[in-house]
Picture 1 (tube, rainbow, N blue to C red):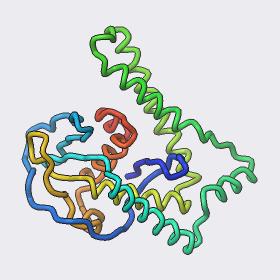
Picture 2: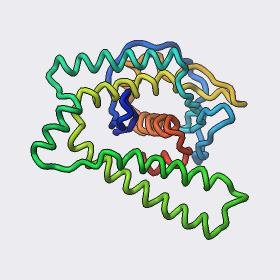
Picture 3: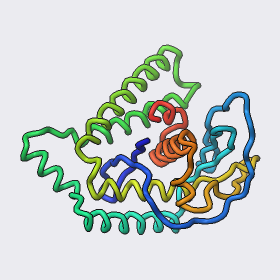
Length: 231
């Protein structure tokens, strides 16, 4: 599964699972079998609560210390990728331009911004009429469809750049670091995975995919329901 994030230069990148080091502990708590999965929701602290395969989970954005750790992981993998001979994004862009291909570099950020604007307007239930809500939902579906199309096209060009591999590592590092058991009553429990290696070896693909997609949309300020369409 591919997820997306922004690098230090503000460029949107595709993300996949990469390696890292240990994080901390994780007990068996928050696991609950459910006949039906409740919808994801964001609390007043900006954390996202989801239930995946019967596991109650809460996601939070990284604090400054965790963000610094993620930046170090980006740098480590970026240098490693260059040593292995991967091209940078600028080198790929030059190669693409030399071959006469056209890139729409600003399309994805614009689409994400529009998704965010629509979601904010939809959240104001008292001010949005039924007709307006229907129109906004139709536009949101189209914007999300277009985003997926553009992302797939862009990935054909940049899936193996040094920046992409470094972003993949940073996203996975931060997602694993910031994924915890939901202890109930808006309380946060211990981490789901005690190490990054445990995260990488997780066999429940739906769990990994859902966590990464929700973490990415949370980082972009998009509502929980957006994750379902981007997953």
